[in-house]
Image (cartoon, rainbow, N blue to C red):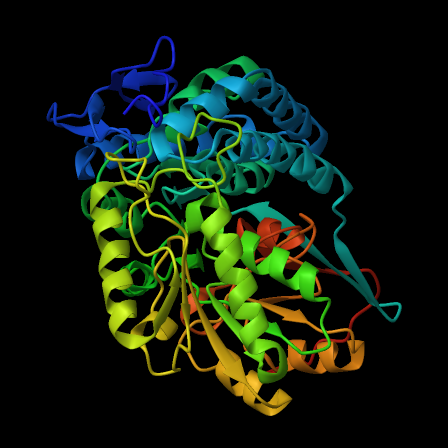
Length: 499
């Protein structure tokens, strides 16, 4: 047990409360739920269990701050100054954030540190965007000028997932606040710990009371109440596709705008002429980093038959060599999966895979880790396109490898699932790379690269992987209402009906 234990962070909060209208708050009915770390699965604290009554209070505070407070009426430069102060607050706490994420989610500490840096950059980037943003104007001859303006949409409901929770919270908070919206954040119930630092960060940066509100709780209760609330015109959700369908149905009642980044089963297509070693590196990193708990994971590796056996052998050898261990150990590459329920689900898929395909690596708990939610990185070969492990999102350190012969077959296999979030293409023939990238049905494709994304680019999926795009000005557009204003500057002729 000693080898895998994660040191308990100093001053670990054992009572995580909501934050509403600038103040910590318990649930109206006093309800709480337990939260445990994934290495020992021992409860470390209790979290306020929000429901409709708590959401009502948070939305009322956010609406009041929007209609009566200064935030939506600040200049872009003034809001940007606050966003940069938020980034400063995150950077000052970067090691603390990484420590809490590592303990709460099982992410390896080196990867958790990277998430803290990205979280700060989200705020700095959108501070720059909102200042540099320009409006559109149209001259209509010498008679009229038309121009468009963006105005903040109102209260934004933000629902975030349990993998890399703090970074994904900031991914939504930064553009919504930059746009002038007020927000209600509902963090994931399995990893609520790092969000507990946000109230202090926001207060230090000068965010007015009621602009930022946080309500913990179970998705079916607090999340559902936030989605259904009539005073929340925007919902941004990252999570599972089935939940996204429920959110769309509920949002339709009030004609809300939704942005949803959902599940994925992303293909990594490797042609015979690819840089073999780089493609192996990318395939291994793409599915085993972040414990495999990432929506853009390249969990289906499609390999041209000429190099198929060699690639399977290399992938299996690398998976067997991946260091699985304590998330707090800087040498660890794969830590503990988030929760016993999720761990059991991933193990169920491993058993399904053993019946559907050929297991060439992993598939069991590492021998030196007798407790906690640990799984040796797992590789299945000869995976058929009708197999469940080919079709269904596993969201863990499990990858399936499938052979193909022609470019046309590669594209057909890449598109043979309901998902369409990301894709990866490896070939030295850039003409073919462009052809395949355009043919793969996904919101994002990387050619000869792993998942490296500039914050200016659109992020989102198609098919069952999402609705809408965020990133760059796409995020600002989502959190804004665009309005056209038409001004007569000359003597416009108006038909005189009935005169």
